[in-house]
Length: 486
Length: 101
Image (cartoon, rainbow over all chains, first blue to last red):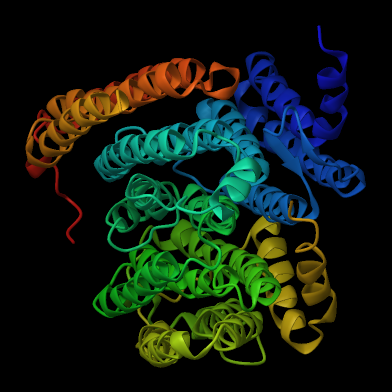
């Protein structure tokens, strides 16, 4: 037995802890009577995950471990922080989300924790084999989670569409990987970087392989033209799962995409330009389709596609070779602020759904008259998603745009398209705000806000405002995570 | 090079799989086409291992993981298809459209 390999497991303590937590929840589920399950199991998983967050902060950074399969670095820790935080928020939401019944809450929590584990491996994997395994780990967990509401045809339909597109793009992804492995002769990203510096490394076989791999990543981050699952899955899935899908899953997808893109296409003009075109397509298509939506969850799916386009601008800047550090920082920062505002808005949506049983935009009419505070918080998140100061969304957008402008003249068109898109987005975000404040009040009942949801909405709203008024700690955390990527 | 015929045949199988996945109306049929795509990748990897002498025989190990993942994915997929069949009494994807575009 290779003892050096065994010693490496000490750096995986947070992951091992989360794995044990998942198994513990499954076991615990058997012994707790149904009426206590909701409270105890969610509490156990939330506090367990918070403990793993502490372990994560104190776990030493090492670099490549386990035969260069996994990279333990500050970059991964930053993303793992985003993942664990959004999982904690999503589980807390699930406690107050009625369609998930008491008898299945244990399995549900275990699956969510396992999905978080998969995403933690995803962001730190630095080998194509590990990337494939962890991406599929997460996908399979999310297929099940999306269809979790029993006897709801919408949920099953969302799961089916998510599954078919997910499995299809996974197949294309692994085929692309096989081409990349055939042309470079290695699965390791670090070795690949060195091989690609040599002459003639960018063979047609490699370029085909990389573009096919991009399909797999594109599906994970809901990039046009691989986005069509997003609205269906977001609308059909239980709302806590939607929140998790749109934050943690997307952040993890970007983490692994950026790692691969930095290794494979840094300074390779044509491929970076392909990414830039995809970015422009993604944000434009997302925003234009969001204009016609009436279901708030569906609207947020399209807005999420548009936001993927903005984050892709940061990826383009990182790979352009002229502004790598700023590009990576902007991706990290945007993933974090996007997590905050999306989690917050989904908490408000769940609170509203619990009262009215509806996600339609019209049913938000006159929301401000019955719930002035909650309406105010909702508007803060909408303003942040639109990217207007003084909210976190502005800081995220500011960094992404400055990164793409620093990347050089040839990406200036992308920045212009991005700014035009931000203007389009104003319309549909403020349409919700219009209904909330000026719509005719139909329902005079007050939304009864449970403690957990109030805490989530409050904490994220404060952080969203804080990130713009006093952004230094957020920016320095993101900038500090760029170092030692290899 | 000896590798080229293998890449060619895997590309053909991949193309058949993609065509099947895009044109089939039956969800089970789509699942079967997906298996073809996964197997095209496996052929590539095993051939690469034979002719390029990959480090740690990764070309043999990778397909084992691919096969396992494909099986896991098919299991979850069949479960989802079963649950949708119970509610709508159909597995034809064009008939499963409560949510509009």
